[in-house]
Image 1 (cartoon, one colour):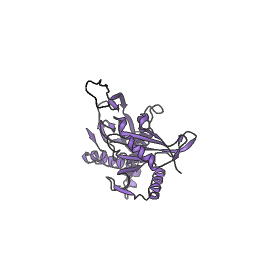
Image 2: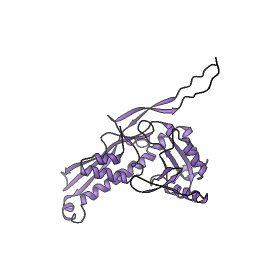
Image 3: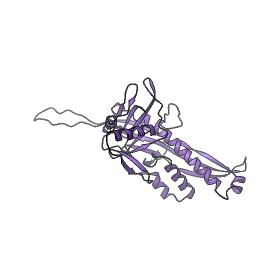
Amino acid sequence: MALLLTEAAKLSTDILQRGVIETVVKESPILQRLPWMTIEGNSYRYTQENTLGSADFYGVNATWTESTATFTQQSASLAILGGDADVDNFIQRTASNIQDQRAIQVAKKAKSVAQKFEETFIYGDTAFDPNAFNGIGKLISNPDQLVTAGANGASLTLAMLDDLVDRVKGGKPDILLMSKRTRRKLKSLLSASTHYLERGESSFGRQVLLYDGIPVEVSDYLLDTETQGSSNACSSVYALGFGAEEALSGLQNGGIEAVDVGQLETKDAARVRIRWYCGLALFNQLRCAKLVGVLGT
């Protein structure tokens, strides 16, 4: 069963854990929208849809051509994401008259977890870090779902974005994910084409730019220094469809946990551990697409 982290926070009866989940979600536009499946064990095998079977019209006594959908067996493993926050008991007792020092440290650690997840969501590669999980840059592997701006990069055009959106089958993508630099370029293109800027509202009340009715989200972790041919000043744009067992979905076992480890033996401090057994799965290649080689000019 899929569950948004915003709903998970509401269901949590642990005040500390609820606060951690809310902090994590607020830090990332991805985590505000990504559905989550709770799985048993430390990995999940699933069938990924690649192409659809065709259909046609036939004449009387004609020979029918067989065509079936193609699938690929995939396996996604959970990674262990988290960190510890130690607060000295002396500081907690003497410096918490204005702000709770323990709460501050736990909130900062929760933000760190959210930022690490978003970075891995985009660029995660188990070939380089076997302790992490594969991100969308690796999961979107179907050549038909890849749009190239240019052999050595090129400026963004509205036609490129339209091509990217059209590569996503089964309905429009849920979001367009890009860097802030690319969003600035998109705004410039829309203004220059006398196209009015569509705006919507996120679940947290933020104003979000829309393109063809699709929310445009930005990530601080989507680099503008990607390499495309001879250029190393490029960025990517992702058209992402979300859905448990049908598109892009997060995987987890146990959800985000805030564990009060307690007093430490080697120093006069108390420890809180934030841990998350999480991963990512793309159930249908046709529900996501990627545009590469976008320059800032």
